[in-house]
Image (cartoon, rainbow, N blue to C red; front, side, top):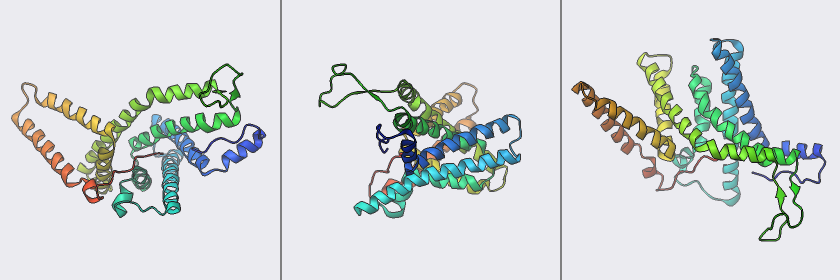
Length: 287
């Protein structure tokens, strides 16, 4: 992230300079996404998910999501253009970038029937992005850190030391404490969302089979890149193994579960994108 404006600059100018950056647009997009999800949740709790405001908030949340990930993808592309670097693996290399995957998936959700569960992973990511940007940029812009008195804290390189804002410290502690657990929640939500789409496909709901294919490809990519998704799948497999292994379970159920696991492992091997991207490591999501 870009550093906050200089502390000696008047506050209105600092705010103007902060708001003129592309990174602020990224931050604003995440903030709008959170507001849209919150407003949609109120409609959902009142069982009014298809009301005018609810539909607007649902769709606009994915417009905001696509905008934020689009900004990150654009900045990555521009950085490559400046250095003349090429994306390893060509088109598959671009598709292996998690930011591209979330961007494309946001556009898919935008035009598909409503799946409220699809909002939650984007919302959780946005909470941490907003918190991190607020801590690193917004708070220092509004309340520049105060220089510590000489001798209050020694600096190895002799540079002046600054006291962090208490709110910035609180946000930092929140992110450090809950980030990993929240990413595990996101992984579980994404797996649960696949099950929800699968049920829709079984009942031949509108465009559900198309969505199932697209989302399966997305979740397969997530599995390849996210240890949290891998752990969630492992935990799910262990739980089902325990249920199937219980006494009194019909042999047909055990055979069916073994067939599902065998098919899943075969699907995993066939769809290993790294075999087609010249062995390049897939870029991790930074937005």
